[in-house]
Length: 84
Image (cartoon, rainbow, N blue to C red):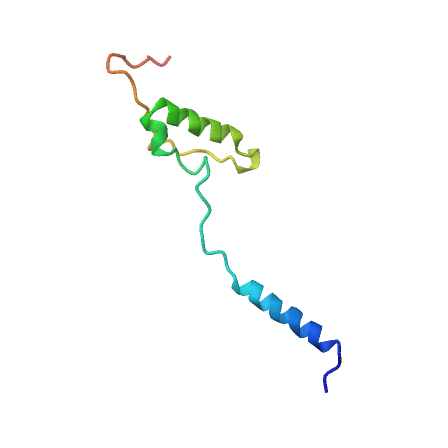
């Protein structure tokens, strides 16, 4: 025969089992340091939005950013600046 304290223990165990079965499944949205978004290369407004999101990111979350896909628009009549 089960005592009166067994039911709450079984209920708590069943609740833990149900909660453990509820996995997330979704992936978090990409952070500002994952990669430069395409919209940052398409317009100055997109670049400003990206820079604001990057500045608002927590310092612990900031990692080096891959700039390989970053190609900002430039006027057609400008020459590259010399590096010295």
